[in-house]
Image (cartoon, rainbow over all chains, first blue to last red; front, side):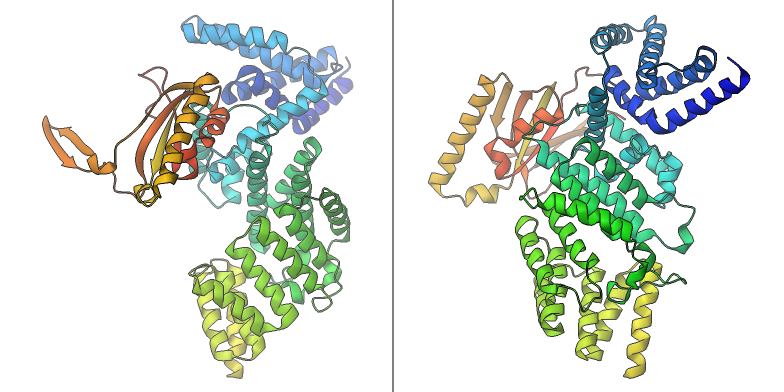
Length: 419
Length: 122
């Protein structure tokens, strides 16, 4: 092969690494029965590809070639260790037998392996922060350093979470399987929770000072796209829609100086119409399933906002109705709070304040900053500036985000001037 | 793999239960064990007497100290266990979720160590 052709092949190896290394990993975890062993094998397989493909040309099915190479390299390693260890020898024999059966590797099987990997990384028996770290590492291919940066955590902390998660997968016998029909609802809910946690971390953190951080919202959307492609369940489709619709407002959510802009005051011309279009189509798909789950209803609410020309011209009655349905399938104090805000838009601030006070009187959301800032906003609109100031101060004491802090301080200044 | 399902319950909930309801719960627990036995998942099980009967002890520097009561003061206490054989954690969770006690208390599922020397630490 000529030098130029060899260079092309090398570029192809890199492209395949970027596009397919996670698919190779997913299958090798199944064949080798162990995360660490599979990661070593992926590394070995790509090293072999980089060496052999420029000389021998590209194989017809690169993914299958890589899986097969990884498996042989792993068996080699195990054999070398097996000279000293009877347990390793047994594992080696088992892998050889299993792998012989699994040698036929179709697209469907590879897709199933990716689903197995997703469901294992997001198993509800793993702590949410561990599942998040493991998912970003194994499925999104982020490095431990990138994950630590994105979460403003120390790298060793993230590394330890990942190690512990892998240990639990191995020692507690978390299976490498796509869940059965009966298990699917609660297992899928666990996966969607991980995806949405990643998205929300990115969504709330995105501001001017963080340009060097990995964009977690983009990673979450990519992850949801993969999930929907593999398993087009209505709730998965709905979560993707919800994230796209939220993401569509990104440019409008903060001013050029990094100040927070609330939904009502956003310049809707800045909303990304492509994302909205895609989100609306997906919401339609999810709603067509007739069994509206929590993400479907949240996406439907986001769709009502996205299709409104302004805050005043929003179908608030429809939004209240959707929150009523959401309370039926996933009641929580936060949903109740959001419903109260929608009611205030329909029936006036006093009605909203009464509902929020009910929640607070019950002892819920006392430490939730958004409950106090929403209440403050309604009191301000009602003209009760003293009580509004109190509520803004309570919210300010609870907030840890810089743009939010500046926003609340601004509101307090405005009220101070008019008092 | 073997999994030990530790059943934690708030005894006040059991104490407050009407007689007929309590009897029905006991019958359901027996039926649940029987069903595990038939499907080949059952290894063993026992219900414990009230935590009021518990005694804790420890030996330090060769000295025994014995105290009345459970090791930890919590609302829910160990009320019994079921030892099962399951293919993996998902199956173990599935089986434990079918036990009637899961609807009243909390079940902690722990994989049993195969090799006594391995896996407790780290």
